[in-house]
Image (cartoon, rainbow, N blue to C red; front, side):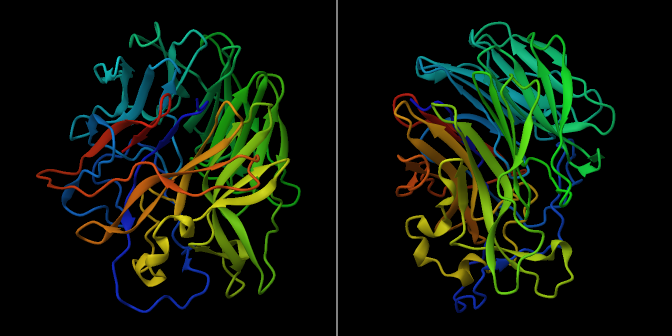
Length: 476
């Protein structure tokens, strides 16, 4: 049984089909550093956010793979490119599902929608919070009661809802509060074996001299009281530049690990051996502020994942892009970043070091799509709701034998909407030696195109799929 379950929102982005010659730039598609990554709070109303790249065409593109439809949502800005935790798999044939969405077209009911799966079907899909909420995460206490965490987008911290019983759907709500200063958003959380709820969020602004510094909220009594602390990085060499939705959290026994993928910078790791009461820090990658002329490096892009293996070792996965010396020596950070088909998701553990786990070039039939076709759109990875790269949104798992699994989203090679916008799929690969080598890539979702004319807006079909006896996945 997989001990961690995966979620990836299938997000399309623009890449025009073309018969132009292959792109001559050997690095791939350059990232325009003048385009700042836009950080959604999730309270944006229709018309407040202008998409940097158009979404799929006017069709209601229900891209459907194997599985059963769960709900239709009018809101799919589930993250800024990171991966939300939306499932609890109890290992006994039951699953709790909680995902941000909106059933009303005006999105006034946006929040966490919850359902419980047993006996081969879902119960009713109902909204958890009474107020407008976002960035839904779900986990469970040791007695099976689900815990849902979402951000409020305002002062007062995060909202935590705890179910009355496993699968019951009757919620008790509390606010975490926060440290003085900017509001905290974009939560990720874990529940350890002692039922401690530990949440890592992003500060919406600068605090302690670091932009988007991470803040931890911790409760030892089912959310009745909370303590707070900042995760301080090393600033003696340079001050890191964090972003939203760039952190991941995991726990095992008394251990807690929090990883942050700094865009174009480093992978930062905080570890606790006392249930999150205090953390030690280390810089995993220690990249330089600049790159020598003619040299190439891989650098983190945005989303990351952290997981413990069976014996308590930390494993980190992150999106990566190609980095080279700045072309004119004057731009931000002194480096240029490129989306590159041969640079993909990286893995680190203390035993294996840094190794690439997979790239887009390893996806079946990827070699049939030219760079000119793949990158023709100019900046296809700059959608407001998909600040990712070619292989994106890593999520990891480990089975009873200790084998590692990596699930991620990526473009379907040579598969486009009617306006030549790429569709995406969910893929998986595995490692039997702790991440030193990785196997072939398999397509989990395999979503064929279905075109349905939409009369109003764009809807997103959320489906549930069972992959094996005790493994499940969602696609949106």
